[in-house]
Structure formats: C-alpha cells, structure tokens
Length: 515
Image (cartoon, rainbow, N blue to C red; front, side, top):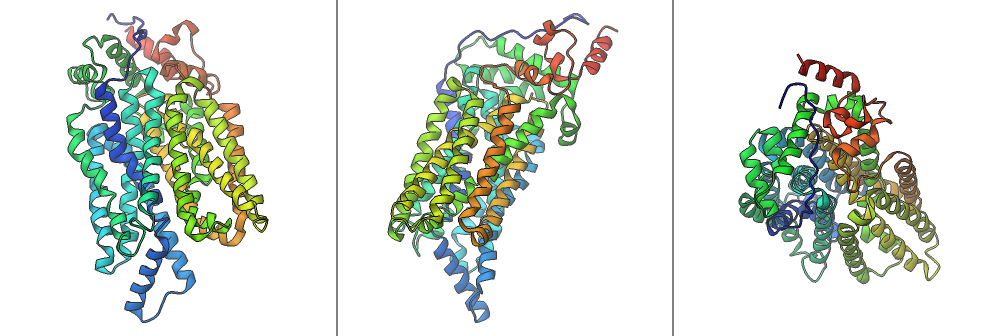
C-alpha cells in the first residue's frame, strides 16, 4: 500500500452461518462463566434462614449468647453485597488481563476464583466458620466480575456481524439459567435444607471445572490475535475453524482496518477514555444503561424474592414454587431475546424493557400496600413476573451488546472496565441497602426503582442510537455529531480513522503519512 493512500473497508457480503465450533465455544464459555454469575446471584436466597441460623449458632458457641437483630442484619447484608463488591474488583482486572492473557486465557485463569471458594464454602459448616462464607462471596464475585465482561467481549469478537447481537445475549441467557438452577436446587426437598445447603454453595465450582477442561480445545478471539498480538496466521486459523470455510480474507481485511484505527488512536486506558471527546456520549450511554440495569432493582428482586412473595401474602409452603416459576419465565424471555434482538433491534428492546419495569414497580407498590385485599397477592406476583419479563428482554440482555458495538478494539477493554465497574458498584449498592430500604420504606422502596427506570427510558429515547446490522464505523458515525466531531469528508466515512479520531488528529495523521 502506498503512503498517503486511502484505505476503505471491504464489506463482508457472505451471510455467515452459525457453525458447530462457534456454537460449542459459545455454550462452553457461557455455561462455564455466565452460569456461575447467575447461580451465585440467587443461591443464598432460598436457604437464607438456615444460613442465618448457622451464623447465630456459631456465634452462640463462641460467645455464649445469640446475635442481636442489628448484627444479624449487618452480617447478612454483607453476605449478599460482598458478591457484587467482588464483582467490582473483578471488573477492574478486565483490561489488564484480557490485554495480557487474551480473552480465552483470562476465562481459564478466572476459574481459580470459582473452584477455590466453592470448596471453602462447601466445607464452612463443618469448619464452623461463617466468616469464610462472607469472604468467599468476595472471591466468587471477582470471578463473576471478570466473566460478566470477558464472555460478551470474547463471543462478540468471534461472531460475524449478523450473529453479533444474538451471541451477545447468550451470556445473559446462561445467567438466567444459573438463577433458575439455584432456585430449583434450593428447594427444600432438594438441597434447600439443613444437610444440603453447604453442597448448594459448593456446586458453583462444577461449571468452572468443566470449562477448565473443555475451553482449551477452542480458538482465541481472532481480533485479539491479529490486532493485539500481530498474529495473522493464528487469526486466520481461528477464523477458518469458526466460519467453517477457507476464504476469510474479507474479515481479515476488516480487522486490518480496525488495526489501523487503533494505531492512529492508540490503545485506550480508562483515563484516556474519560478524556476522549470522540467517545464521550458512547461512554455516558454505557454508564447510564449499566446504572439503570442494576439500580432498577433487579437483584433486589432476586436476592429477596422469597421475602417479597411472603409480604405479598403468598403462603410459606408455596413461595419456593412461585420463585422457581419466576425464574423459568426469566429464562424463557431471555431465550426469546436471543432471537428477536436481530429482528427488532437493540434500542426498541431497551425502551420496552425499561418501560415495562417502570410500570411494574409502580403497580407493585400499590399492590403491596393493599395486600389485605384478597386478590392483591396475585397482582403482586403478576407485577414481579412482568418486571422479570421487561428486564429479561431489554434491561439485562442488551447493555453488554451495546458496549461491544459502540466501541472499537482499542477502546473496548477500557469500556468494559467502566461498564463492569458501574454495573457491580450499582449491584453492590442495591444488595447492601435494599434490606434497610425495605425496613424503612416498606413497599415504597419500589418507587425508587420505578424512578430509575423512567429516567433511563428518557435518556435512551433521546441519546442512544440503533446499532442493529451496522458496522462499527456506522455506529461511531451516528454518534460523531453529538460528540462534536467534525468529519472532513462524508465520503471518507468508510475509513475507520475518519470517525475514530477527532478531525484535527486525522489531519495530522494524514499529513504525517504523506511525508
């Protein structure tokens, strides 16, 4: 290529299908990592009374008296909230680890943060120490914090454009399957009993062990191999396995264009991302969507689902069945989102999802306040299920897809670090304060979640563009005007550099390339 010549993207015209290799690596990555995240969100919900009794009995044996109510509330809030706190720490590790060890390598290393705490939590009752459970919730949270960011990145970079949205929703599908598995196994007739709850906690290490055995047989992200490692031969080999054919020149050329943009833009740190005008509104949008996803109260619902149903008037013996039914609805709707995300688009699912959650929280507040009326418990259950449906099709599934699509390779790890950190800090906040909110505000707690959903809907409607079936260039182009970036020539928008760097820097790059 001559100096100073323009480089344009070569469109990938072939309609890429889902191959067996791509399907298997998607299943293994999502089951081994995302499944654990969902499992640990819900695993302590059903046996929480048994676990609190264990805390109390252990404290009694040591101190000769039982805990007071305030200490128990504090310890249980820490048990719940230390998981997302660990997730925050895990999110901070995403950028350095995926750049050094790769996407697949990071997932393999991450299994350490699952297998070790699984063994420790499973033996906590025998060791008569509840502190180890609280500490292990941080460690298992680190695992979830890494996996919740790395799995979507890994799958999104391996998937072709026409499957990118669906593959981005698959990790969320396995999160919901993990939640449902914990709810089923946590039923009193299975493991949600005195003898079974330590086993219930320890089972989280099983998916990690399976991933540790199976994932090494599958390829690393081709984009990582070519753009960050400079290994074109390895990238070609990985693409051929993933696509099922030999001719991968079009995708290799597209990656080269992105590589040129990275060299012009430079690999971004989190600090650079926050100060870079060209991605300002993409970054703000990710922060808003991630905050909305968690501060809308979804994990408050999962952490305390049994309490919500009891307060709604559901009989104690029936609560576990209603909880499992809710988890099943969550799985079914997220499974549906895998297929409709490419037909309906990302933006409409976000608007509909957060909108349903907003209305459901408002009605749930009324229903819980009027639970003395005979049919109000049924309305409360309907509101929770509606909320779960809204979150499943939009608020839970789509934000990670948007991070993949709104950022280029050079800025994607930093964007996932920011998005993941916001996600887990918001999750931690809900887990820590919801119990106190419930005691202080009662049913009115859900009005706060209603307000969060409403603000998020308004923001998405005004700012967030549709990204369905668009290249990374087109998505950045749609945000360029809002970011205050002037493109020198609209005909040059096929050049990654034209929209990935500010106009002034682009001129400098072009001037230097002609010298």
